[in-house]
Image 1 (cartoon, one colour):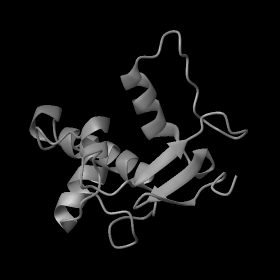
Image 2 (tube, one colour):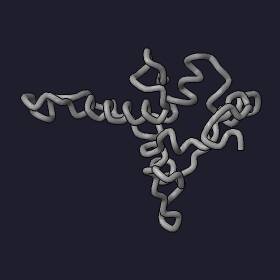
Image 3 (cartoon, one colour):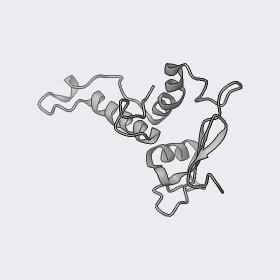
Image 4 (cartoon, one colour):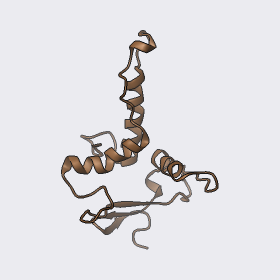
Length: 134
């Protein structure tokens, strides 16, 4: 699982944790010591892509904590973020005519920020977000 508190990482954002693990895993895989020739540095098979990062931040974290969250499944709590790509300071740019669902998901994971979170549900209750009370 990926942590989203200070002991789990430098940010309380699941998006930041996912971005950090993707970047860090790429550095681990390719190595960072320029004095060592490329084929001999790094750790093979350590790359984490955006799908695995999201899994670790949701289902993986829930499994580590033995909590019924992180999946749309009977008996699991409804913990969800509603994302709005159209906020004024958004970095999210979608092209519906050419983006696949995977493209949309990847762009959201890499570019979403706090202002993109329209609503937050925890245990089925809307508890926050920029439009939680609307």
